[in-house]
Length: 145
Image (tube, rainbow, N blue to C red):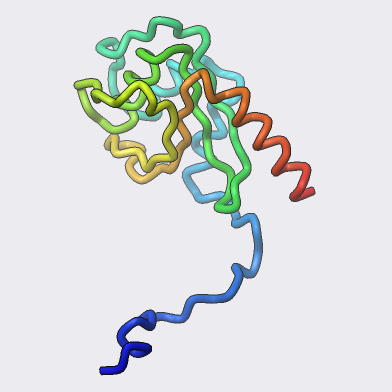
């Protein structure tokens, strides 16, 4: 077998996608309902479990909004502090225990693993990155027209 045959893909990769940004995935419409409602209650409803075991220190600062990406719009979840960031991450992934991430881990683009939202792609942002992320999103929206 020659190197170029060995290194070739088994399927054709288009040079560029036909349309950018891509259309929203089906799950985005479910998250769209979060706009204008209490974010903690929405998370409890969408995850489908009692989240009393996940008390948030700053429940009133939890926010959900959308960001345009090349892969379609994604929900962005912004907790109010580091502890709430860890609790929301565990909730989205269907775990009872909090992960021991280094303090430098302050953002994720993730596929949720909790039962009712498995494979929903979301962005989880720690509070420190929020202002910078919003500026980037605004710049991208201006560029895309």
